[in-house]
Length: 631
Image (cartoon, rainbow, N blue to C red; front, side, top):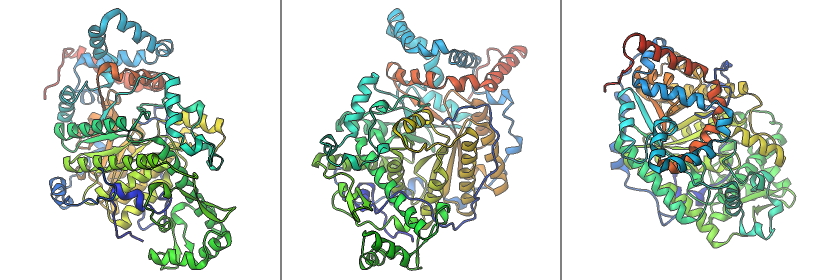
C-alpha cells in the first residue's frame, strides 16, 4: 500500500516502522533474469539541522530550478551500433601524448608486486630524500596525477572542464583519509561500535556475531578496492566531514551541470547505530520469512511473497508476539491487509513510532514471545548521536536539492549496509519527489542484490517518487569473505565472478525494464566491464531508451577505462568519472591502498595498455606525437 506521508530524514527514525524494504509483488514486466555474461578482461570484482522533529517545507522554488520536464525531451536514435571501443583516436582525443605515456608507466608499476608491497616505505623515503615540494611535484606527474584530479575545488576545475568538453561529467569525491596505523584504526573501530551496555556485558549475548565489532577486522581498510574509509573520532569530526561534503556539493554545482557528489554515511556518525539498526532490520526480515514458511511460501522470490492476514494473525498469536485483537489493530490502524494479504512492504510499516530513536531497536524474541530491545539500555548521548547522524543527512540532502546536484550514497560493508540502504531510501522518499536527487548504491556481488533492487523499485512505484540507483559489482569482497569465514556466518558474496556478472545484469535489466514502463527510474551503470556496457547499450536499443533522456548513466574511475568513457560521452551518452581530489600528502593513504588493492586489476588491464600503445604509435607515425587537445 502506498504511504500517504513522507517524513524528513530528521524525523525518519521516529517513524520507521520495520525492517529493510524487501521485495514484493511486481506491477511491471521487469525481467526475472538476464542473459549470462561472459567475463571481460577484469578478473576482480570491482567497483569502479538541530531539531529532529522539524519537517521540510517551502522547497517548491528550489525544485523549480532543477526540475526537468520529460515531455520536452527531443528523443534521438541510440547510436550504440556506431560506438567502437577500439578506436583509439576517438577514445584518447582528450589526452595529450604525455598523459598516455604516464598511464602506461603507472599501470606497469602497479603490476610489479615487490614495488607495490613496499610502496608506503618508498613514498616515505622519497619524501625525505626529495623534500616536500619536489616530492609533491613528482607525485602530480605520476600516481597522483593519474588517479586524483587536484588538491581543492579550484585546482580540479580545469580537468572537469576538459572532460566535460569531451562529453564526460564528474562525480566529485573528496578522498582524504586519516593516516592511521592498523592498531589505531582497530582501537577507534572497537570504541565507536560498542555500546555502553555492551561494555558491561549487558545484553551482549543477544547480539549476532556479524553485527558485533570483531577485533581482527576493526581496520576496515584491508582488502578493499577503491573505497575510502572513515573512522569515528567524535561528533565534531562528523560535523567536519559534513562540511567537507557540503563543499563538495558546492564544487560540483559550480563546476559542471548535472553533476554528482559522493558521500559515505560512516563519515556522518557513530557506526554503532548502523550496526545495531542493520541487525534489527535483518532480524525482522528473517521473521517475515519464517512466517512465510509457516504458510508454505518458503523458497519463493521476495517479490512474490504475500501472506494471508488471517493466518498471519494466528501465527503472531501462537508465537506470543501479539493477540489476534492486537495484531488486528496493527493492520487496521495502518490500513493494511485490506485485500486479505500482506507483503513485505506492508510488513515494514507495522511497528509503532517511538519518541526515542533507541526504542526503534526492537526485535522479536520467539522464546519469550515479546518484542525486546536489542540492548537493555541506551545512554542519552547514544540517543543524541543517532539523531545527529540523521540531521547531517538531512542537511546534505537539502544542499544537493538547492544546488541541483545528485547525491550518490556509497555502499559499505554488509554489517552496515541494511541501515545505510534504509536511511538512503528515506532520503529518496523526501528529496526524489520531482527528480532523482538521491542515488542508492547496490552491490551486485551480494546474493541478495536482486531482492534489494526490486523491493526499492516497488516502493518508489507505490509512493510515486523517482528511483535512483548506482549498480556496482562491489568493493569489499576479500574482506567480507574473510570475516564471514573467521567469525562464523554465511558468506554474503556470490560464489563466482560469473555469478556476480549474472546478478549485475539481472538487476540492471530489471531497472531498464522499469524505465521502459515508468520513466521515473534512473540508473548509473558503474562498471569497467566492456561486456556490461555493451549489454546496456543493446538493451537500451531494444527497450527504446534514448541517451538524451538521461535515464541511464555510465560511470568509471578517473585514470582508468578511458577507452569506454570517452567514446560513450562523445556519442551522447551520460557518462561520468569518479573524481577523487584532496591535498597530495593527505590523499597518499588512499593512493597507497589503491596501488596495493588494484594490482590484480592492473595486471589484467592488458587491453587498456594495448590500446594506449596503439594510440601512441599512431600519433608517432602520423606526426602527431606532440598532440594536445583543443577545447
